[in-house]
Each structure stands twice: as C-alpha cells, then as structure tokens.
Length: 249
Image (cartoon, rainbow, N blue to C red):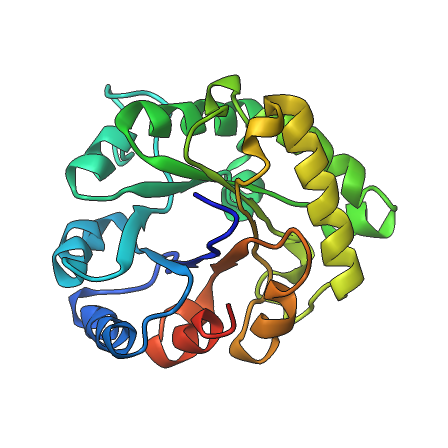
C-alpha cells in the first residue's frame, strides 16, 4: 500500500444481502467510466465475500474481510480464519476495529496476532486504532494511539503491505468529527510511532482516517497531511455516497 496512492476502503459491517451486490455493480460501472486516482476496496460480511469478488472481477475494486481469527484453524465455532477469507478471494482484512475492541474486549496483543495471521495467509491487514471520548477529553488521544501502534503492529509488518486506520471512537456513527488540526496531530503522531516501531521503511504506508467520513467532508479530510485514505462505514453501503468520497481523494 503506497502513500502516493490513497486507499478508500468501505466497511459494510453487519449489513448486506445478495441483493446488495447491485451496489457493487453500480460502483464498478461508475469507476470504469471515471477512473479515480485512488485505490478502492470493499469489506462486506463474510457471507458476501466470495460473491462480491465475482461481482468485482476485472474491476478496480479490491475485496476484503472485516475480521479474522488469529488461529489458522480449530474448534472456534462461528469464527473465520484469514486463510478462509483468502480462499474466498479477499486480499485484505480489517483487524482491531473499534467495535471489536470495545464490544468484544479485543486487546492490542490479540489485534497484533490477527494482523500477523492475515500476513501469513497472504492478505494485507488494515490495523485500526483510536481513542474514546473520555480519553480525548482527558488529553490522552496522542498517548493512547501511540501505545496502540506500538502494541498492535507486529514486527513482521516491516517491509510488508498493510495500512493503519485511525478511528476516533467518539466520532463513529455519532455525526461528530474531529477538527482538521486534531486529525493532523494524531496522524503525525501515528506516523512517528510507526517509524519508531517498524523503521523508516514504512514511511509510505497509508494511515487512513476512519470516523464519520461523508461525501461533504471527504475532500478536506483527505487533503490533511499524513491522511493516506479513508475507512468508511455507512457511507460505503450506497454506491452514490461512496463515490462521493472516492472522488474527494
């Protein structure tokens, strides 16, 4: 993942049935007509990964998973391994999303193990980090994300294909958005921590912004220094909305 080319990734979360693939067709058609300068990815529920890979075949759209188990296989009913996602055609996977960290108690150590599992399976992980509202109000945002970077990025990521996504937890689904200055401050801190952790070789690895991204604020956010793309939630469910963000890159 090169910093010179931004990555706009859509996270469908627990949304989407077979009928939703029509949005992929609409997105594909639009991108064929008006090719953007950025990379585009969609991360649907695991039930749609293989079908979405087929729907996007031959297009600019990359398909990823939303989570994976750290273990390669075993008695883990209901879980999906990185190898299973790869087998279905996925090329990347989100790990450590704030909803996993907050709702499922996932630790930095577990997120690191999942990122390593993704690499082992041949996929590029998108490793999520970000502070809560309490942490932001206590002035701990930079300290929190730095700590998460240091503990969530396994050393094997050095020289490999991956991305980091900064998600201010308090801005997801709330309509709240950090100021451009706050976004820049955190992204610069994340970059410094990444270099400290993995070396100068990751200076081009993209840092995505992932909090309440919408077509009407995408252009200004994506122009902020060290913002190498976006991890988009609800606005990625409809091709028209997602295209508005893609065109902002």
